Image (cartoon, rainbow, N blue to C red; front, side, top):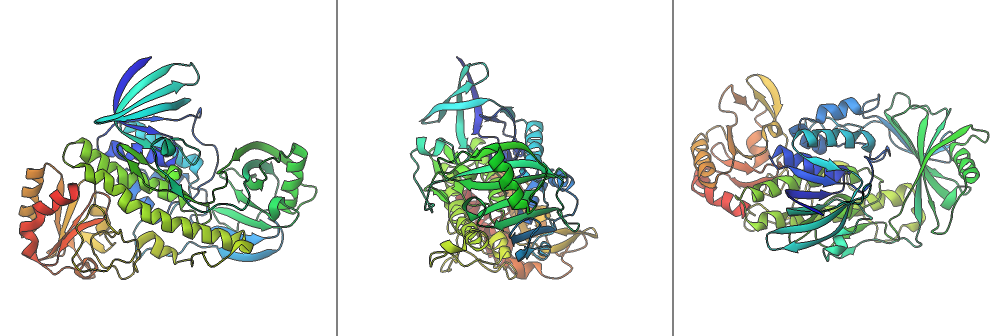
Length: 531
């Protein structure tokens, strides 16, 4: 048995684990990622990246690669409820992505998980991460200053003891880290345990995408397993994936699967070649949210933290954003400039959002696939823009304003600018070139001051020097360097021309001072956020 030490051990090389490693590398922290499988996913699932996700990916320099990896057709898609892929359409959901340009300057992308994982893994390695496949986590124990883990190389049988300051459990919904850390979970259960098969097949199928990037077909037909299956196009022309649910003891044979595919496609004599079949099971769980996203030095991300139905496409986006919101906390703590409360705030901020999002995905599932299960506990489906841009953290690494009411979501078209919300997109110009206010955020803290707030630059520089944290300051609208052509910046952020806001490395507002009266508070505020 060999022994080694790393700053952060990440278990699981899916979207959450690879994103965490990549964003850690962006902050100068090298992570070790271990994955029990022999390689990255070959399933074209979790397709699509929303603008907030693309903003985060842009900070790591990979947003362009995601756009390049998407299939032709941009973000247009065919999403329907139908009797079969070629049959009668019962309901048409979306054909053109909503225009979210007023809320973000970032585009959407339609990259599949199969391609996304390879982009994330490559960039993570460039930034210093190491990825080991065919490696399982056998056990771990927490100590006062770190985590001691035993890893097994399943190809050669070699064991290693790895010590790390933090362990990130991104081991999926089948993972064991959550329970081993003593974290309970809650969620919705299925009336009957079932297993889902993801079946890749090739066929000369007449699917008219009408120039769209991909097609997603929710099929309702009593001749199909459970009366419904889902068929989705892939990055490879002529290849499709059908997901279908079987009982725990059902073992369909190849002839039965071929016939099922023909029924789903609506072509009785279709020539079908089955390429791959993979089982996935969440047991009785339809949604499952961990009761805490951290326990000591163990953090959870992705499906290990929040299992939800795929309907709505937010599971993959949330996995990537988990890594984005977690990495800076770990990096600042490892650098010795933050207290333990900063890592703990990941749970306070991300778990309420995961709870709400899982209920939205479940409501989408009821609407699209299982309307017979609707009851008075099913949430009203909110405007997607509100879910993407309007979340208000109930508590966390920010300074709450006295006496305020905090709804869980607000209208992003009329942002409040309050601490704990996403710093809103405002169209600015830098030396004549249009940019977004969000383009100013990087790996450090950012102070955005009004046109008359030049004194904030000195205060921010002194706080940065004292606390040993990076702080960039921008005076918005004072001249041609950084202009506010629409005059919208002060209103969107809730300040006057002499006020300022403090924005965290993950683009969340940490504090604001409507006027220059808060100049003397800035250093203390940074201390509170980091503590």
